[in-house]
Length: 624
Ligand code: ADP
Ligand code: MG
Image 1 (cartoon, rainbow, N blue to C red):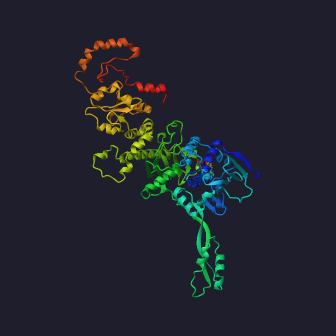
Image 2 (image 1 turned 45 degrees about the horizontal axis):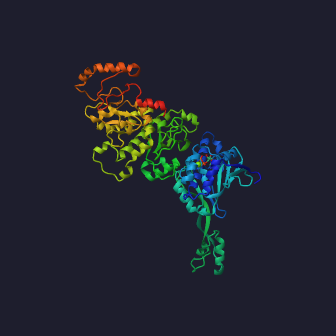
Image 3 (image 1 turned 30 degrees about the vertical axis):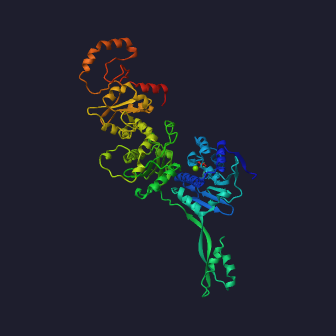
């Protein structure tokens, strides 16, 4: 077209499109859920804007917030349209030509080697999955602020954008037309599309309609004589299927009726999804599989891993809301890399079924950013700006309850894990059938998100004790396995007052430490803390269940009284004095006779309130 403006795709996009169009990837189905997800996002946007400005929805069909799918078998076109916010010319160029999200090039690289597209939706490039099935794509779009435009590309490194002067006006929204490749013919089958919507787009909160064919019986005038019957009936059946004509002729021949029935194909919009939101249903009625699928749709991660846990609940009282929270099966790669500058939580906020935002940081503390889910509040006002919502007093209450529920949910992973030490172990518990499935789940959780629990202990004084219960670590007695504070306490020797720990870079290094000699000899258990964050953690975690924490490399270690202590101290008085003089006060604070060693003759201990040697090392290398 002459009026078209041509653009080059950003190099990264171009590369991704090349991969997609030449892809032998077996699950090409995913393009449909990506398009439907985009349509749903666009509808969320216009609905949100309409809360404060009713006019924005326009009138007539434009007010229907829905998604429509249509097939043109002859031209081999599959089109998906929404009445969402639409795109201006500028939007089309920017959104469908460049990549906004960071980390996408790493993703493209990974796709190239692994061929795994399950995460495409997470990386802000889901749209391009259309090239798995189409070789030519047109995007017709109309935004309130602009004229109707067409974006088109044959995935040859370039795309064109033109003002739309040849199509019918589509009204507000976007219509995506996929010119399907020869081998993608299955996507012209209604049954296939129904199956896909059911499978991948179950949780879309807008109606999805398919322009579906339907066989209906219609009455037509009976024939004058039998000879002309065949002709007439095939004429009246407007469908492409010829067999209709034969069926029409099977009528009884006894009496000649004035009319007869024939099959005819008509089209109508068929609703494919149940728009009732899963979180509005009673938790008893929702199956595990449904929760799993809901998790995948929220996370846009369609790999096979199931979420580690979920919690679905209704809060009542002053502040009413419903919520579903998930613990993902894996931590995203950058979870801790960007911890201190990341501000995005993964919770979606709805107010009375209307999606408000997924960039709302007031709902969860930072350390719980790894959770996924949504909150639907009945108490928050609908028709105010996001900024005003952010100030609303109910948010504090919601946050408090969410934290409590989240920690309960995490505790339950441990409680239900047969590999974990639990109070219930002491009682006789019946083995449940899903024991196998829950086995080792907490270790999995700990390996992925343990750091978040530690950061929580540092940041959240109110829930410190609850979080401490969730801590896991290795000890001198844990035999290479993870253990908990409760378990440690249950094994404490009679007369042992403090919880002993030691910090360092690795368990191997710590095991050889002279600080452990006497403790080991006397059969005390010592916790190994080997993560840099542990040093900070222990500055906040002072005690647990009335027991103090004692760093065994620090001053103040008491292993119980020995009657000879005083005697020994006396007899070495002169030597101690000499040592102190020899080392001078620039180097050491004090020199003491110690009972903490067994074989090593002497050791340098740090003062009770100063940094441990390990902390000094961390501060020097600035690893955190
Ligand atoms: P993502 O949805 O993660 O942002 P996509 O590649 O799926 O990434 O889409 C890119 C962008 O294109 C979207 O962010 C959106 O701005 C725009 N877009 C795609 N489809 C539509 C649509 N149906 N209506 C409006 N905008 C759309
Ligand atoms: Mg998308």
